[in-house]
Image (cartoon, rainbow, N blue to C red; front, top):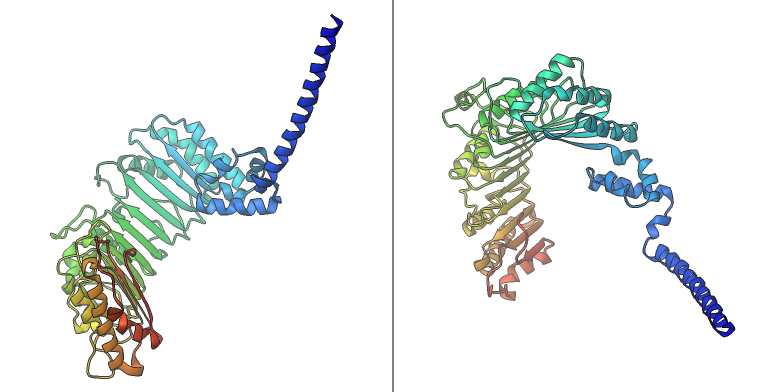
Length: 477
């Protein structure tokens, strides 16, 4: 019996020594993991805070709630980083508890301290009891002086009640620091029979307005449109945009996408018929940057002139684009320097082939970018004249041709090189061309390569100091 007891004691001691050794190994493993796998956990708080701030810029909606869940150390730093909590995204549906939404908002506002706020409110259902919003708007009123941007996404029918609630119950609600307002009307119906569907409270610093599926004539800005520098509209009527642009006096940039064009010249809540703008085109003396996406948006050029336009981007290939551009340039006489023309991203078959009139050719364009260009258009762009200055675009410095015809890409490159060399040789020292990019479109099986003979004209131009890039299967411009 004593022998058995001695054996048991010996094994227990051996197990104890093994457990002690195992604990030592685990401690060493933890140290190595901390040094090799989680070095960020040992960074000074100031550096961790800086990293978190960059996370907030890249992922403003998810960064704070993600970082606080990593570990207690990160949670402590995140709770003391106000910038992380400056973007508040609220989701409200018919099952939402209004108290939870208010608590969520107040928590973010408290942790954001004195940072300016970016608030987004998304209402998913038009049948929510509007009375439940009273607590939310009360909380909104307390933080409204800190708000820099406000994004509202809600059905049109609900927006009417929401607007009435603000006007009737909170008439003194104001946004003294608000710079940007975005309203996106959701739901199936594009329009509802109500004027001034959304009337934001006083916002004297408002400089950017973005609307989607909301007629701008229904957005009743208390301070008017005079301070708006940047206007974006999508899925609204062309005539409504024209009427709103008529109210602006300081607008610098405008982006219009997928507009609704009524050739008969009428649209709901548009006080001015479209025909009036055809007889007397709208003139915006301050606009310098204009982007028109979709054929209906491009029709804006028929009804407006922009004497100070510096940059124009057209996205879509529409029938009669030549006439639209000719009439526009004749009417505007703008100092246009940057022009981009490309088809819609979903349109892989259309090519940009426009007639280049003298009205277009004398423009002071320095940067021209075209996607899906036809060979004839490219040759016309670069054609020389017997005089010292090229016939078209005498100030052209940079030409970028994207999504060139892939099946004929080698011959296309050769044509571009020969024509460009003629232009430069004709102009001599007066040539302004500095850079040219020629990038092919979608790849074709067994695409013939561009040989040295085809590249010879471009190589000679490189020796003159012109930067040339020729690539295959490149991205669209």
